[in-house]
Length: 600
Image (cartoon, rainbow, N blue to C red; front, top):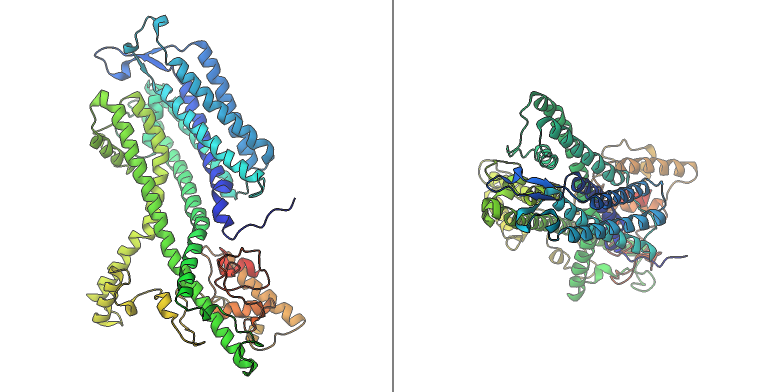
């Protein structure tokens, strides 16, 4: 069945259901099963001993039917996780694995909700009143597991729906790093649960208290409310903590890399498109449309020579190319700040909502105010860990484990985004202040002061002293075909600056003829070798306009000839016009994430 043509911003629109949602479900699905294990490990209810600490509460045995149903639910959840993992490893088909995983996770969530509602009944058969009974940590772990199962199943349902409606392939098209994220999460959780069991036996701790201690230890918070006292426990702590912290760092690094790399890439496309549309529409409204109009040789200027027409067309294309580079530079700045705003919002959300939950959980036992909880959350996820405030309630400790698994990656991503925005401003500001005071440069004192004023006012004053992209609309206000020749504002590198040019590259002449036969084949191979080297670089390689003219000529397109050039149309999709294109249009090769890919 042929699929409908995909719109230009398809990758940014459907990246979340096709890639992000399966990765999130793959990372949190094992967490839900780990919480199910915690829920099964100890009884759900405890009898509170008057005038005793909550840690001394006596467990009330669970009925056998509850343990059996919990065990069955845990098995179903593990099978669902295993099928998703095998599907990511391409061992089980997408159409088989995802429906079973979705049904298994929804069934697990519903089962746990029903169990929680059933167990929350009067305890007359036990001879206990409701005032004597408190919920243990395992009960709250079961609630968190139900929430995660439901959320993961819902995410995969959206993914499966998108594949069934032909929005993308019926397959989890993930890279190796994306596929291994779920396996890394599983191994880390197994390490935490087994380590907690070992230390609970050595130190005579409650198992779920040991799970709480393990998370506090591996996350390097170290409150000090739990610590090993035996020689064996202290001796095992050294290798256990070293291996655990390294493993946790690898998982956090994987999450950070995937979010920053792929999130910026696909979500950034939508930001790039909106910035392009905004600037182009503004130029068209201001009557600055000549930069977008190809110069057709037989219609526009019939009395001009062919060489003059070619020169004016390539000048127009160069101005169009530089406009696109400036659009990319402006959207890159906006993209960084959007990422910073999103990560800051999520950080504040986890901080303030988490503080609200901690305050409600600890108020009855320690009398925490909301400010106490806010202070505790900040001390916890910045790993300061004074230990003056620590959770003691069953709800507080179980929620701390759940909250920490979400908070630490969020904090890491926030710091990474801050390094691209706030830290960059501080660094550039320090350099500017230094250039005014003790480290003068070629611009002089007055020039440096104007540059600093331009930066502080975000370019509203002293526009001629800005560093980076100049104002696009102002720079392109020209008459006739007299178009600007300013260099691109983004950093570009010469493809031959680091490579020894082959002998035949001396024929690089946009107006001349290319060699033929074996010489042309050798020239193509040498250029492909250079571009392939650029594709292996860690950062995306940007080519100058002259380099693009040369490479396009090698593949049969002449920038001097307007036959394959068109006026930019913001309403057309990428596949609508394949033979004509504009540097600013949807078919522009500059939209590709890696420019050299299209050339090769």
